Image 1 (cartoon, one colour):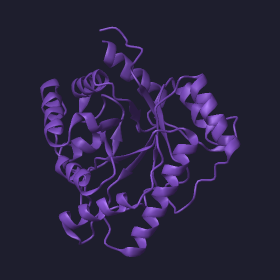
Image 2 (image 1 turned 90 degrees about the vertical axis):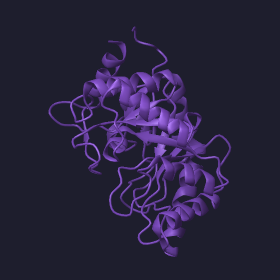
Image 3 (image 1 turned 180 degrees about the vertical axis):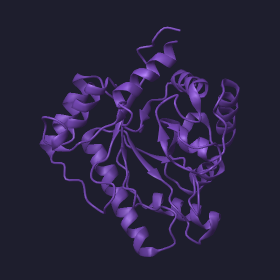
Length: 288
């Protein structure tokens, strides 16, 4: 199999001024070029705090121009880790709606088509109640034309939702918003789905198609895992060097590429290996 120029593989990239020569998100393009990627993911601000994006029109223009110049995309914005769509707590719900609204608005300003969010935890509302809460939060958003909210699969644990494909399908039914989805390979694995062999990958894709619909899978977070299947432990490993392994990662990469779905890495920087190493590794596995 020869390398296909349509393979969209990139990594999470920082928009911080310290990350490159530009004042803002254009630095993510600079970093993506450095990594050898052609799509990718950003945070619009620190994901650990409630904070509004601080990106002016000039910075947005630079980002769009450099993205077009280097043919990088599609980009996706990952929302704050504090956002909880499933919460029964009104104050947290209000903060989550406000934060999500700011993310979809800045995505429109940057020309980014996707905003990715975790469902969060129901914290006592129950699975059904939590998923209904998530649908209601999504209904409260005014999403600009050209922007789509992606609900990401989760590794599970505690009262977190999104580890089962049925949760994703239910959220889509609970909201009038046209949501699509992002699968994280490490999360899928941690949640108990087998993607360690070509046959297992095919079966998991078939199950996702039956339950959710492949036509609604818009992005993949491509990560190997440091922990075993079904452990609900979310710790990422270099591609092919974790518990999913070379055979499974290769099959998942090839199937994802065949479906025309872009992939963004969230792999660690350790053992002398960074995003650039992992992007090259993906291309090697795809074309081997």
